Length: 113
Figure (cartoon, one colour):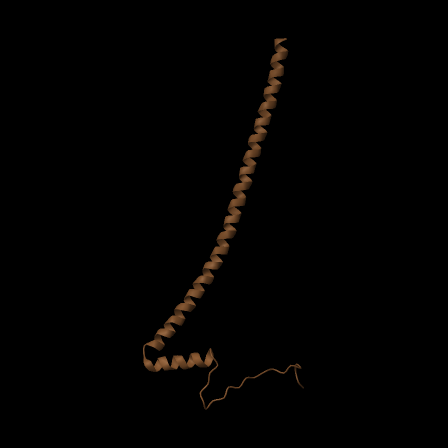
């Protein structure tokens, strides 16, 4: 009877050992999937941030160029008057008293023959 008992215990130990192995393997698999997902999502976020960074650098360079242009206008009073006139013409659609502004409006009917 003691042999039977031992073999029954051995079978139960094998079952427990197999269950522990299964649970350990499942835990490792879940951890590996989580790590892979984290790495992939982080790389996607890095790529998106790099694109945004490049856009911001381009905007910064455009602002710097515009600031240099304004600094050039501000260095002399003659250029300052020219700058004010450029702003009035381009941004505000102003004109001198002896000038006329002509707007070209495309025809509504499409192409004419």
